[in-house]
Amino acid sequence: MNYLKKIGCIAFIAALLISCGSDDDDVTIEIRDPQEVYDEDLAEITTFLQTHFYNQDEFENTPDGEDFQIVFDTIAGDNSDRIPLSEQVTSRTLRRDDIDYQVFVLNVRQGSGDRQPTFADSTLVSYQGTLLNGSVFDSNSNSVWFDLPGTIDGFATGIAGFNDATTTIANPDGTVSFRNGGIGAMFIPSGLGYFNATQSGIPAYSPLIFTFQLRRVRITDHDGDGILSIYEDLDGDKDLMSPQFADDTDRDRISNYRDSDDDGDGILTKDENPDPNGDGNPNDALDTDGDGIPDYLDNRTEV
Image (cartoon, rainbow, N blue to C red; front, side, top):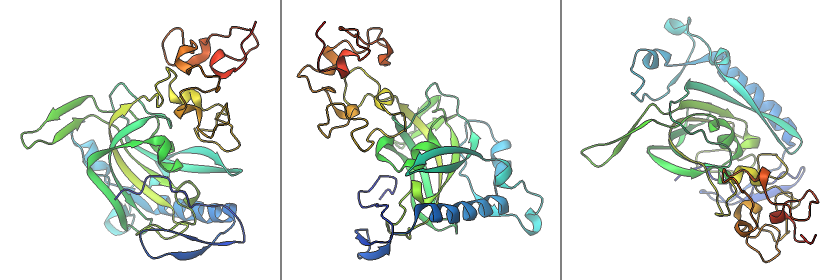
């Protein structure tokens, strides 16, 4: 089972009790203040980063084509001279529920392929998910496709910007190997993971760690309307399904990135000349009446 997909029972309602279905029996979880939880998560993640290192030597002493797994260990004893992760990670900020969350990213290998995913794309990855205590709750070494808009926000944020592999090799046993893809790890606060929801092996309010190898990237146009999905994030919050119809022009409860007729005028988006130069970016979209609203988002285009 994979644990990267968003689930619908996460709720941020302070001072209430709810039951969320999970892989275990239903449990009643108190809904805590998101900022308070984030402060605790940040402290725990920071402590982990300051006291742990990864197997950097294996990657440095191996040709770029080889795929080692990232392994973390505690800085102590014979490892006391190791570089802490806190000196090697970078942070990425994502605002959700009025909180500026940080996702810490360890870039072990950038990758040498031509494609980099955004939060709106699809990725073929091998990965392992663990808690801060090292407990493994999920892994897939054979690679699986993930549509990033459907994954937890922290994962989509962490993997964005890495490059995919340059080479695919068909092995005699029927498996496929990839060379020179991005390799990294991400450290995710629970507010960008599952927050109060429990999953098998993941207690409520758990920060998460994912190590990953990026294999392939699909730059995605989910509804086939000629507009890449990243450009259907109308409010720019890196969420294609924002509330209050922010990404749903005709308010039909189908977000634009999944809607073949964004403005609900009965004319398919792809037939309203949304991208004359064909690059997937609608910044050159036809605006017949010159009102500043492109035809594909304007249900009234009379001149």
